[in-house]
Image 1 (cartoon, rainbow, N blue to C red):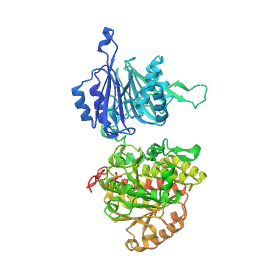
Image 2 (tube, protein in one colour; image 1 turned 120 degrees about the horizontal axis):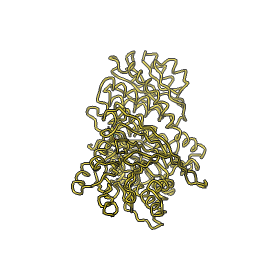
Image 3 (tube, helix red, strand yellow; image 1 turned 90 degrees about the vertical axis):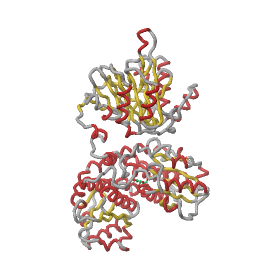
Image 4 (cartoon, rainbow, N blue to C red; image 1 turned 120 degrees about the vertical axis):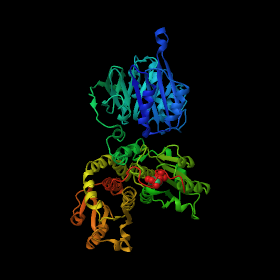
Length: 632
Ligand code: G6P
């Protein structure tokens, strides 16, 4: 996830672009850059110059670079990067300048490997590891081959790419336009008085205009100082008589009335709430390019293990801390049941100080949002020293844990700002399930038909998640009634099987942000202690979707009710038996029993969020906590 901006108008645009990027820095800050057209010599018959300045790190570094090499001109594009393809280096920083054009891009071009190979075969030289440079080459080729306008060249080029993009392009050949296009990644156009803007997000534009066009997927626009001409690009499948068709569309600007801070959160009160709602899109990003329904398989190129190496795995050891430890527990269950491999999950902070037996034949899966957690990193280094193969599941590209590992499977959930992890948790679940399926298919333990069911279920999951999130107000009411009460000083979260890590995660979320004491417990263990705590004041949140554990957990619910406990149950839609005895019920759509965690965790995140918001705590930066724990 990166931020892009564009400007065309009468003003000198370097500072406009940098100010816009500053508002988008929440989308990433691995590097930043500008490309600006200098048209001063044109009156003397000289061509325009296209100048680029880029710098690694935060925007202040770009400021420094621009002081040394000021950019002059009133047409330009800019980018703040959150690395996906390639390390955060200056060569990988955007804009990418190829021949006549400069391109900035947010997203992932899925077919980048084949396109790059093809371009190299055609003699093109690459100066970065990014997928974006491919788009710049493709547009440059189209211009060289006679495309009449930058718009036409961009359309032709984009008809070859698959994946997610918001791009902005400028060219020396046509210095009075900026071309932008959107597919999956966000992009808005701002309409000013004789000037036009583009940005990934509204906050970047609010200082200049509140008249915003929200581009839709497939839109491509030619921006001029006087406004935007928008068309819809529809790319047809291979073999169709026309590669693509284009139809003009009219998109009326909307007047937005957001304060700048509201706008950064896209109207949400807190980043955490925004990130909870981003989960369906985060999962789509984790799955993108990896699910291959045609062969009921997972594209596991990034996992980097040969078929031979997979056969040699004797055991999987999952290492993680905090929320990532909870997703790793679900991962352990899937690896056992789907890949039929012995698997264990370990708190990295404990594992590294034990005399744990680890070595060849062990696949260590290190799960970490930040990729920087000190204990996980130390445990990984230790396991590697002892001969284990290490696979990182991380969100931040190029971070320390993936670097210390043999391979990395990135979650691509975008930057997570709220300290309490939400979207990265469900994205980790998706990555772990993909890994389990990939292992299962290679080890012959997962029949094709079951793989197809799981993959189809995963692909459909974002829409089921949206359905749960559409009813968030139910969780708000339950939080008010059951958790934000003077009596509710402790809460118990219960689950079995895959709902056990969800219970742990629900309890952790509540503790972290609302400071209400909470315990997550395997429901079968309730009788061994926690049952003594249950009285009429104690909310007991039970995660009880329809799966193989349902009957057993229904009995646990009865045991809680018999002691006057207040049961809040997360159940599958249409459940009647637990619903008959629970005080409050939150329903989630029916799903494959292996996929319920993606749904059941959502109400728990929302309950915690609303309880904390009612209490007025600092939801995004709860006391004493840090997003990335780089101390032991
Ligand atoms: C901190 C964060 C948690 C996170 C944990 C592990 O405690 O506040 O949200 O789950 O670290 O972080 P990691 O980046 O390794 O997933």
